[in-house]
Length: 314
Ligand code: BDR
Ligand code: CA
Image (cartoon, rainbow, N blue to C red; front, side, top):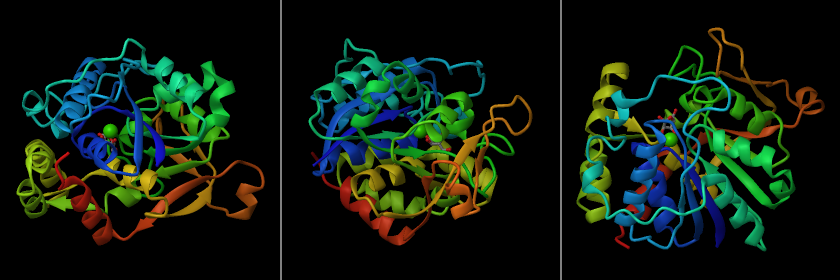
């Protein structure tokens, strides 16, 4: 089994990702930690607790994390896509909520790492504030993190929250820089370039809804997400970014990666929150630590794998 912590800001696609983590037999899900992002941290924490209740996992501790980024406050949320409650207006239908841990996110992650005899995978699928704080506060624990799998960034796709920036990196660029460019943890980054090519159609979601209560609950969150994608891209199919990252965390090799150093623009100009990937191959890797950037995957196989994992009731 793969010891796993998920750091998340649910979020419709976070819900799909958490379902993968909670229901997959090879996942040893040791904690879920929450962060500001798609909605505020009170809401993301409540959503994470409700989702774990729906997935039949009251055994998983939920630790509330950062409510604001490390340095600069931000205003924007993504209510247009995820609905005002973060789960497409359906949050109240999930649950009952599992208990909240008495440990806050960073302390909970530290306690899991301290107790583990094996390296722990951390899948981070919201802004990276908690992860950066963990690395700064407890550098002694870095070697116990086997791998980061991060959903975030954009190599050549452009931004989804500004012209240049992807939402999770934009949500805390200073934290993203700490995690992507200044840690020694083996890191896989799953950017928009890949996740925007693995979309779920209304028909796919209709079919998921027929598989059981979990599939039906997940599919019920889709309305604002599909409407927003339809308005922006002209077709009603939604990218479940975070779920792709979780599949890769549990089945390494789901995505095909290319090593390249990645830094983050922390200026306050129009590039703020954009990821800068150095694609000069060996020349780049000789001077800066590379991260493994996921640029390819078999979209049909990923969708089939998602259906297989989400279709079974707990
Ligand atoms: C990321 O931003 C959020 O809105 C999603 O949950 C995902 O983690 C995609 O850019
Ligand atoms: Ca997310």
